[in-house]
Length: 71
Image 1 (cartoon, one colour):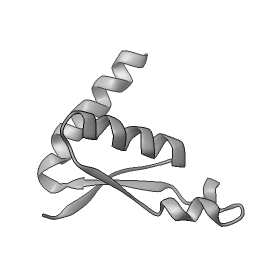
Image 2 (tube, rainbow, N blue to C red):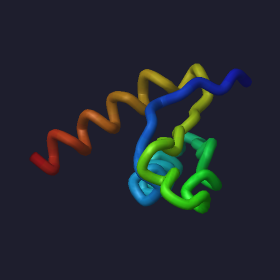
Image 3 (spheres, rainbow, N blue to C red):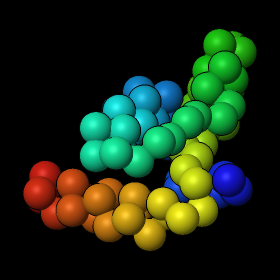
Image 4 (cartoon, helix red, strand yellow):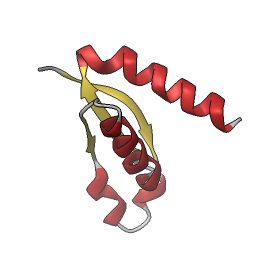
């Protein structure tokens, strides 16, 4: 298993994305989520959503679908 970055997001958005991916059967994890606790850094350091390399393309497709649905 090789983790790759799907993208960097705000703390709440990253956790919503992880939940939605996992509900679709794509395991995901956040990196740097603890940085939001450092004063002022939550706006500067995005929370990275990581997925398995094999899941990257399906995860990107889902993100695009969700964005299209909300537009």
